[in-house]
Image 1 (tube, protein in one colour):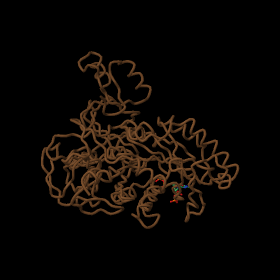
Image 2 (image 1 turned 180 degrees about the vertical axis):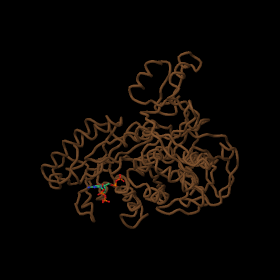
Image 3 (image 1 turned 30 degrees about the vertical axis):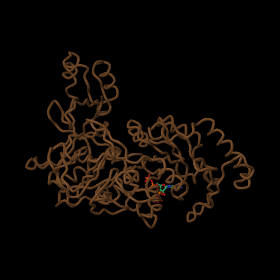
Image 4 (image 1 turned 135 degrees about the horizontal axis):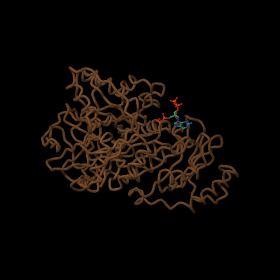
Length: 529
Ligand code: G4P
């Protein structure tokens, strides 16, 4: 197989959802289709148990296991599928955002009863900003849920999507009879027997035929015809180009637990989802088919063994082939590095590979060279663009609790921030350090890791912040900006990239400040044009 065929064969994507919508279950069914795992439950066991969410030790333990599920690869119908794990747990959201820099498309899982939930909104917003192609899977149709059209409306209104259903349920919950597959023009009858899943698939391209009554009964036939007429009237036809541009999102319905509607999703996915796409670097756009290797670090995983401080850096290959023992330029450090044991990921194991292609993820052992966003090339000065930071939800001062170990503490904080565990802000007024996290539990994890991996002790102090905003003055020299800096000094800090951040203590004070200084721009993400 030549280089171009290798690229065309690959599909690298992430599954995003609010916790509990069914992401793990769906992942597992996809792996079963690929023959990558033999039994249901294999992925599930790796999942953070809900009962353990208040126990950070459990998170620590799971962190080790989650290396195994960071990338799940399998072959299905000749396609190499790489699923990148986007941890759905609240405390991992920062990490999840970063993973979205490495996917070529996503599948969004929505719970039929709960509809669009908060975390889905945030993640989809990032995908929309980057025009990532998205397919929506509405899950748990074996349960009572919201009306299908209300759900489609919700996807449009809450997520800003332009949807078009490619399948449509026949009944729901107790009355769930199956699904009409608009894309393949067939009916899948639901058996209700979890071992059997699909009772029968019947090719059926003319729903006006009276045969429909014989298959699903009079009432369901009438409802399905009405629904499909409405779908036809209201939603545009599926257009692959629009999907690929991120301008249209096909929707499937099913039940992951019952493995119902999953094969249809996967079959359509491998047909329409993009092979590795070109990626924008600061300098230029890089095509996957370019000969020279380029790639970037999107995730760093610390080793679980505190005695070995090496880490695993996850690199997405954007172009060219990544070869074992070949020197590559680490652009930020301007030095050449060789990797004697790059890891590739399969269903649940990793092994050393000699060659990897665009779309693939390689895991590189790292002793502290890498930061998230670092670029590797064959000599070209390229910088891939990352995902901007969003305001954390929780903020605390971090203090050194053992003055003899301040060096260790700062090194530890630095490395944990490089891993993307949390964000660090340094106050302008007094140089004190403030940690911002997405989930409150992360503070305990940081404290624990500083102690066990770096031998440093820290303590926290509350620091009430409503939101962090990145500041852009119209003119850094104008009087208004100078006054803003003077008056608000107490609330100003620098982030890790030395950008100025305003830490507003309440919504009210943020609004007042915005009104008072109209020439100062307050951004809610860390990167702006
Ligand atoms: P997540 O990764 O998005 O957090 O969700 P996960 O797959 O763990 O699914 C959350 C719960 O929803 C699980 O139940 C799972 O069995 C259930 N579920 C997933 N898909 C379907 C479906 O199609 N229909 C129904 N009825 N339920 C579904 P749980 O009780 O929380 O866990 P477990 O005891 O089953 O492991």
